[in-house]
Amino acid sequence: PGSLVDSLFLIASPPSMLMRFIPRLLGINLQSPCAAGRYFSSTASLDLTQYDAAQLAMMEEKCILVDFDDAVVGEGTKKEVHLIDGVCMLPAGPPHRAFSVFLFDEQWRLLVQKRAPNKILFPEHWANTCCSHPLADGATFLGAPICGEADGHHGVIRAARRKLRQELGIATEAVPEESF
Image (cartoon, rainbow, N blue to C red):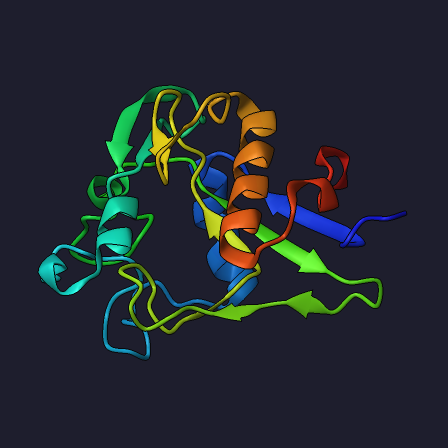
C-alpha cells in the first residue's frame, strides 16, 4: 500500500548461473552480433572520445569483480569489465556483479525501456526496466560516495534502488527493500 510499484523482480545470482539463464530467458543467440551491428557489450573498438562527460564518467564506476561462485575477487571499472572483443559474459571478460530489475504494475504489465543512442553500452537496445552494477565500497556515483553495495543481495538491492532513482526518477521510498 502506498508503493509506486506492485512487484519488482531482481535477478542477482552468480555469473555462472546468469550465463546459462539470461540468454535463454531473452532468446538471445550469443554467437550473433546485435541488430545494430555491434556485439552486445564490446567497447574494445569504440572511439570513446565521441561520448559526453556523463557517459564517460559512468564508464569509470568501480564494479565488483567476482569468481564464478560470486566470491569477491577485486574491482574493475565498467570500461574494463566490458572491454571485450566479442560477446558479453564469455571468458574474455572478467565476471562482475550486475543486476536486472523487472518492474510490473498491478496488472502485471512489464515496464521496458529503449536505451538511448548515445549510451556506450547497449545503445538503442530494448531492455528490462533497469539494469546496472552494484559498485564497490568507496566508489562514487555522480559525486556521492557508495557504501554497502558489495554486501551480497542487500547491496544489490541498494544499487537497484539507486539506479531506479537515477534512471527513472523513482523515489527510493516508492520501492521498499522488501518489494524485491
